[in-house]
Image 1: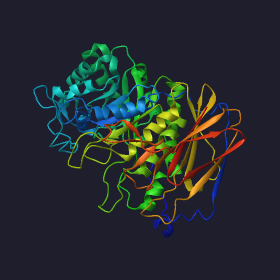
Image 2 (image 1 turned 90 degrees about the vertical axis):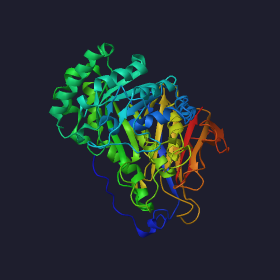
Image 3 (image 1 turned 135 degrees about the vertical axis):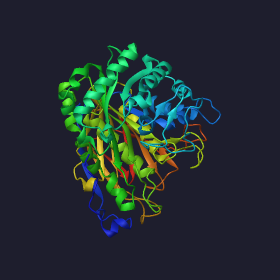
Image 4 (image 1 turned 60 degrees about the vertical axis):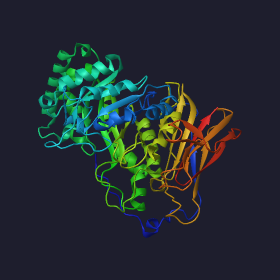
Length: 517
């Protein structure tokens, strides 16, 4: 992954004034009524996955009273019920990979996530899981799991016991993939040759200890760290010996974070969410995606740990990154990933951090809540739809305007069904002057695709830095509603398709979904 360095913007943008908006912008977009050959292959209805850092998972699964956490259940259902897909939950991370299993420990963990951040040291304090931790897998009706087993030091971690008790609780029928380790590019022994040797050895030992794994395509490989993707690529790993295990590997996984050192100011926030930056970063993974497509088409490519920012959040004056701007980024990231052939994106959840889509229980950071990032997920799910035959294409929207705009089309059974349009230009009520500017997308080619268009908005009245009062299709999800949707405004519109061109206006810091009927 290349470093994310962008040229600084002018003083005007630092002050919240966009120098590019001296006149109204119109983007002429030609859309094909039938699916073009360059569109993605059919999209998995379970594309929208979730990831839980090992130490946090128990508290996402149980509430403060020790009962199944219905708040978490309802929020995941709010997303996957829109596609009919299976909730795919990845449970893993550095704290688990450096930790160990202790069958004699009574508590679920030795470092409760409501009080401690993930313990990631190689020496000193480490996470220890007891048998009761794995009861947390029982609280997710209809879900399947990507279960990480420690790979860093399998003897210290009791990796075989860890896997056995985990699979016993999950059930082999609900195990989507068994992940071996987390971010191996950080291991002191790492090289591609050594990784392949040790991966194959651990897989052999796991199959011997747990016979139900034998003969199944059920393992997950890589889980390469963000910013280190070039250190563990598909071609050299498979040609270096992993080919021999290809029939047992379900997916190859990478981790992705757009930013790792916090966002110092509004101009930097604009730079980080630009579509051109996101697409450039994703393009670096195309050789891996293409290699699997051409050589191991049954193996999927997935981002199994994904977020806007990881590592230091910067100084106290830095911008809080779980805001509406980064929610729009996560929307654009996922739609772009869909168009490039990524099979799955799992969004990372860490309890004592800003890296989460919801806070399931009370912690020292505050009461349970739904965060801004969550609002990208219902939009993505609606864009994917329920057919199981959806193919996705990024649209040519004409003038790039420094990556401030993007658009995508979804085709069901070869026919145009949905369009997403994003205006990523940042506007904020506190930092920007005047009313939010607008861009117009002049859509051509819709005549004959249907009779009507229903238009839904993803929006926040106060703009880019909003952390509350967000809506998608007039709906909100809150702790007060127990994670269930609540209609709070009626801002969806019905448009007639009676012309060869239709103009759609999208406000700065907003996205719209067009459903064609």
